Image (cartoon, rainbow, N blue to C red; front, side):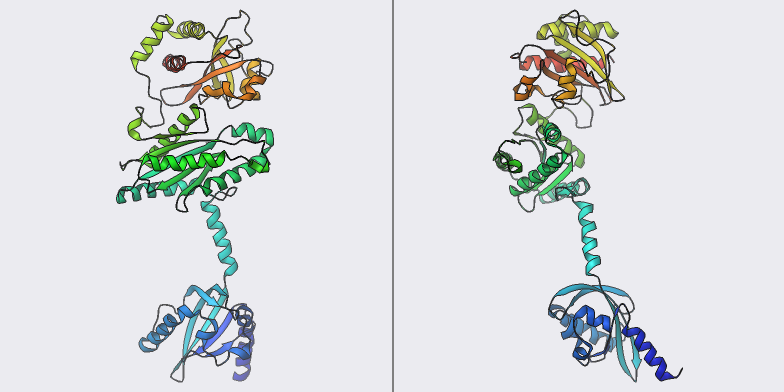
Length: 470
């Protein structure tokens, strides 16, 4: 094969290459332009040969830098962009800018430099990269940031707040009674509700405020530059007002509210999870105050350490409860059974029990009732499908009797009137290592019976008494 045939063969290969192939002389004029270059940039071979590459494919704002780089190479004989792949913006004939990946090489021909570039349009790749980046840091359902992004960003926000000596507030929100709503309307409607909740939440925040969905119906908001508690209060009030506007999912029948906990960061050196725990604690204070409101906590507002473990009540409170119930300290089950009976009489409830959760099954350890033939008994276990507790615990009000949370406002719910008994309070029994052993609970058949603050305090102290005897 002679030299002319070899040159033609090489040109045919380059002309049909899947990469755009562009040749440029030392003056920056285009000398080579294959079919893929025409496809990518929109200029035909005839239109570009002899034209300045700057004007054909380089966006105007980058042309000066390109020309300076060319001059540096011609003077020094080297440049960093040669013989490696680089990514930059290019321009089509239509003026549209798009990302390309380009590799440039050169040859010295008759004392003059010739430059050759292999170019790929990476628009599709960039779109996929953006999608992957979005999925890595955003919640796929609601579009707000996800738990991973939140866990990374909160320590950074705390550090910025400490360096700048500017305030920071962390909001922790959930949707009141979301599980019941989700179960009654279906998971598809529940997903739509979460999306709408995220939209309404963001509508009352600044662009700089970081909204994240941690999972389920739990959301957080990082608000930097908070000067006073009043600032945080105004934001929370605006959110609650927006949620109370109604018209959820396009209907006036659905009422959606939220309990909001706000933790104020005070500049101390702490781990981010301590601030999250404080906001979470504030949220449950809002929930226990009737929901559809907010509570603010600072670290100095709490006595218990935020280490994921329950701090025991002061001994004086335990002694007071024992004296109040007139039960002497005894060991083992006799003390718990006798104290449970005394407490049930003190509260004037119909049934009180201590249940243990083992492998997901509720086992009744101690039961006391006015009735000599109570509907549940020691040793019973399972879901109680035929018992009255089933209708309250595992049926229409699953979020009222919860093994981890206390919800004294259960009596205020309209749906409570549909069940034959009233669950006044369920208190978690927390062991010294912070784990939930089970539940201490009281029931009544009296529709209008309520617990006052003293009664609730007694139940909490009794739950600690239980944990000390397990």
